[in-house]
Image (cartoon, rainbow, N blue to C red):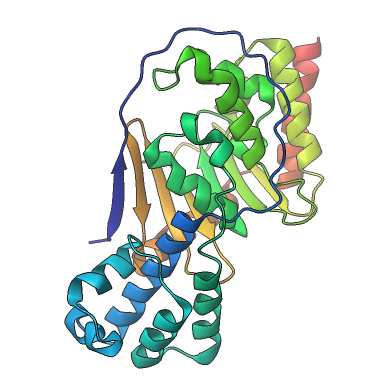
Length: 309
């Protein structure tokens, strides 16, 4: 059974709105203390279990009690570089791995980049925003909408019009936060994106022809980037690995990859290495049966031509 970290969200009422979007200021750093603690804690737990040690045994290494080890592994307590080094050495981790995790621990006291948007980010979603900001690569499969990293402001705003989770007054700020999260064009720290979307996503008239033309052209522009790989899953492919649910994978330079599944009331984080490996295999299989990037670009261009006709 895969270990899953689950969070819940309180649903808020809303109504329709007109979004007056203004370009969000791109943050200088994507640091997030809570997300770093999450990643470090996950690594400490996996390394301890791989070494066959109990939390009580790990506590003796630091000369502390067992609850502190639990807090360190769940990210409730900030992990110090010397503590992570001592634990990982005792677990038999290699020197490079120890140095990477200790370096992460040394950055865990920096400011949270998404702080200006904290009022409109649900508690359950803040963890993901922090992890996404730290990720180097992301895979995403979407069956209903364009992935958030590839959305235009007007497309994103239209999606929020009928949302039960976004209050009317918060909508412009939510759109701004979504735009601030986007890193595909970030010259300092670009996110590598590999995505698969269903063909039906191209035909869903979000916002009407003007909004969809702009959005589809934006996809073509992003596909010119070396760090973006987009595949369209033809409707003619009747059965594939994504039919059960949408999912995402996040990869990090200094920490282990995690899976992410979002639902209406929160999110699930898949941390078990075998389960993450299964999702990785699913991602590869989805890309293999979907259209190639060049074929996908041709299909998107054809949709734009139809909208202009």
